[in-house]
Length: 79
Image (cartoon, rainbow, N blue to C red; front, side, top):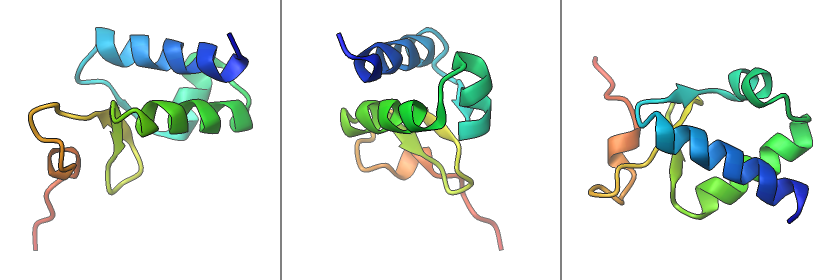
């Protein structure tokens, strides 16, 4: 297993264990203690699998399976 696969599995497992978990890249760096390039590639892997989505403010959260269009992952904007 590659380092990217291992890191992606760790990310996937944490988001699976805590469905409401949301974090940005800096928080992810502290949580998993990953180098920036490895963290980026691991998040890309998990996002590419359709499991995570990025909000408008840059946080990552679990994608809602019942709403695959991505709209459920973006916060509403009020005017």
